[in-house]
Image (tube, rainbow, N blue to C red; front, side, top):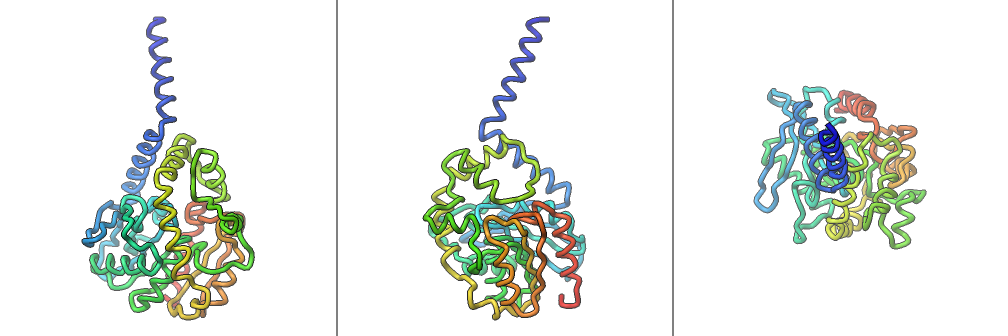
Length: 312
């Protein structure tokens, strides 16, 4: 009996120890996301464009000529962040959620450009490959900047855009992250667990629960891809910015912002709203940089209102 008890305790100790290995966190996170995607009716696939192969989630409305939503994640993020938001969207919409170039399972190539305009061109090619003529492009942070560039480059392919805490304009008030950038530091450049904890606290005001061992695996991923993220930031932060160009956006636009965003200050919302003709603006009080993660149902409800408005 004592040997059995000692063995059981040893097993528990080994299992607990395993949770602190970065690989364990990665496996648990990826497995959970696969299950969640399947439960929500999303198929995971790849689209080969020759020079790049997009990894993506896709949910079909199951009927011809259904409107399409193209969901774009932010810098250093991945397609998985959209799943709970996308699950709240009416099933009459086709939904496509790609890992952008340089991110997730689409991967990184040092020869690629990561400028917003280059990313927009890749997305136009992705829509061509999927035989989709027009889409509403919904982007968070860097994804919002790419969505705006897509609308500028391909207005005839853009039914509308939803930009959620988007990058791309100079905010009247510098955010906590922007102040670090001005000092030559980047909160996205992670060297250790403490760095990641400080960064993660800046990303959301109301983050969903994530076990610490999974967060530690995310910290490890940031460290592994640090050099890649630096190259991506050089392109997307310095090219194709929108100051002075917002008035050229001619498609229906919804702007959503979290009032407690520490990465991109909420004061930038007014710049977007005043700059884009006939834009709509929604400020969500008490949340941070990723409303679609922090409050997926509320964010999806507001997006649905926009999609079904007479401007669609």
